[in-house]
Image (cartoon, rainbow, N blue to C red; front, side, top):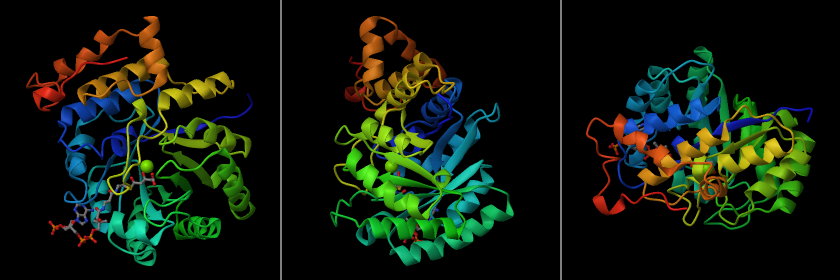
Length: 330
Ligand code: HMG
Ligand code: MG
């Protein structure tokens, strides 16, 4: 097919931020490096947010220090304020993202301020990024609905997207935080958005709570969107979006794109292995149906996930309580 699609892998950040038990740095760095080895080139590896708000991301500086850099991979970080930006600069991230919401109530729950105040906090972040030559992406949460307010108007989504771009973001990831939209909603919202905003400046970020994410990607592709976020193994959720489940699984996005003739450069077996390794370490079943199918057909060896134990100095798979260390289930 005559176009390229950019995949932004958000598993190490969006996928892991919801995990309650602290995960060893070695496991997180292994995940990021595995994803890079599978061929993914854009990886949101960490966030520099309040440790109290999201304890799992407390080790972000160590994670950034522990991963392999270079090799054409861009490692990104989520940043809420100037303090987070200072940490991101210290960690030498390749790109940052600020995050706003189309819902006032979600904004309060997520970052403890209203939408106007969130933009006031982004201003120094974007200034610092500009001074250091670091690209800034924007996320817009609750673009298809809010866990607290319910419906969110398309006008609000269009206006807040435009505001993020005016503030200095090169692209906005229009996000279905709670996975409530369907393909018809995507078509409708994009028709409004693309009347005001160039399509190159829009990415789509779907959570798969209701199993609509792949269909939504197809609706986005049809409308000319060429950048999608996803999370290996379908890991994910937001601590401030009750009931939101994982993101669109990267394995499923890659499979869809390849079936459409869009070369992704991703080795699906390596990617699925990375997903199995982290899912297993978290005591979760294989999170993508692609990995399940590869396991069932024998194309993937569940033993391949054992490598993480070798990389952990303690020999402890992830430092989770014994009862959580279950094997891969397919
Ligand atoms: P606040 O309470 O308004 O700010 O929180 P504060 O300045 O009063 O600071 C509160 C505490 O956080 C203080 O520590 C600060 O030192 C500390 P304490 O005195 O309580 O011990 N602090 C920081 N620590 C580390 N790094 C920092 C930082 N800033 C302050 N950068 C704040 C405001 C934004 C900091 C807080 O609410 C927060 O960190 N929220 C994070 C929320 C979050 O990460 N949510 C998940 C990511 S968003 C998402 O998943 C959606 C997305 O995937 C798209 C979609 O699906 O919709 C992107
Ligand atoms: Mg998300």
